[in-house]
Amino acid sequence: MRVTGISADRRWSESMPAAYEQYLAPVVFRPFAEDLTARAVALHPRWILELAAGTGVLTANLLAAAPSAEVTATDLNKAMVAFGSTRAPGAVWRQADAQQLPFPDQGFDLVVCQFGVMFFPDRIEAFTEVRRVLAPGGRFLFNTWGPLATHAFEVALQAGLERAMPVDPPRFFQTVPHGYADPDLVAADLAAAGFAIEDQQELTLQGRATSTADLATGYLTGTPVRAAIEERGDGPAVRATVIEEMTARLGPGPVTAPMTAYVFRATA
Image (cartoon, rainbow, N blue to C red; front, side, top):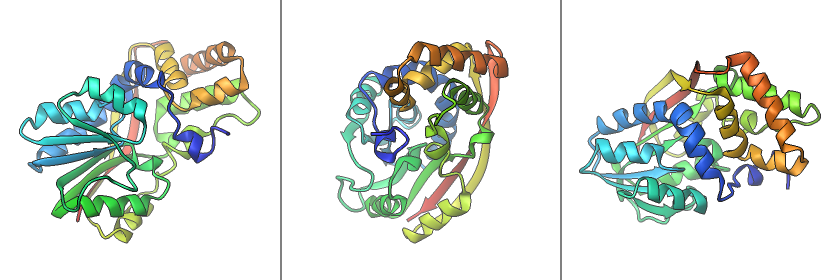
């Protein structure tokens, strides 16, 4: 099974969440989690459903900022649910497929998702499920990465992967995290699922990494790219080349770089 395929791209081994949490969450995901949390709290939700919660970066922020809300956090991957439930134990954690949500109709007034919609094989089907579990007038709040070129850390990472593996390098970051980077397509999918868009913004935030080598380690061991490297062998050499290329482009660290995403708020 090639890691460039959708099924492999959704595969997360049990050791990956710890690397993801240690190296990537503080630099790449926490800035956007803080932004989504502020947007969510402004809606005064009582029952929140989080999709693709991962290790609980956004979950923990929601619990702290909206202590009176009931938060249900879900992820497709068992390893993420197990890890996230220890990081953010105040939420109710469930393993769940966004395209077949195990919840009754109209049970939530807010559904949030941080950088997860790109992983849904059928986004219209998933969005339709989100609309089903939202109460009338409920909101769907989520973000998705912009094009790869707008994420300086991952531009450097991809260059390192292409240098280390010049024959058929992994394209995971181009095709999945940055593979849903057309706001017009996102808007059309929401409309097809019956949503009305209330707000749509392009947002650029700064990621701050203390060590470029640690950041590279996070990407290489805490994402599905890890499987591609393991399948091809010679992992230490790949890691060394990627770190060298990222350091040449970004510096050894501390380093600050821009990351662009689109943020959507839609109503059921």
